[in-house]
Length: 118
Image (tube, rainbow, N blue to C red; front, side, top):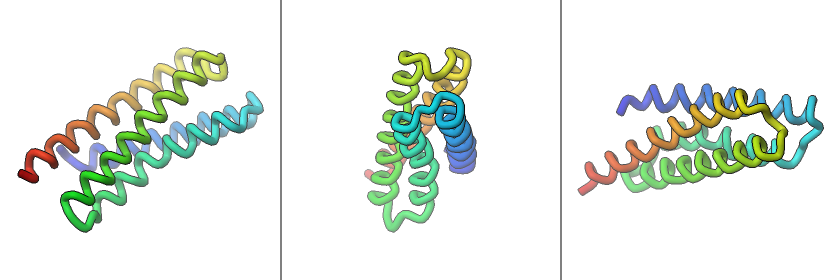
């Protein structure tokens, strides 16, 4: 898998997360859930960047696995924000779609790395 695609998509996702967090704070006056989403959503790309300079294959897989956990957590916060009417369904769909794409790419990258590790 081209690491630049994953790197770029995770960065684009982080920008979207920052913007939705800004919206939640300024327009909805929502501070707790927005911080949770901001933390998990921006961690995905940061961990992918960390993995680029992993000390070993095991370290790479570990960092990518943590990125996957953060991406999955972000799905939870997006669901919660939608179901509590903090974000509109169209906004949710856009964020959720990119988030699911990142999850799939991370799963694929981890599986490939593990199979190459044997």
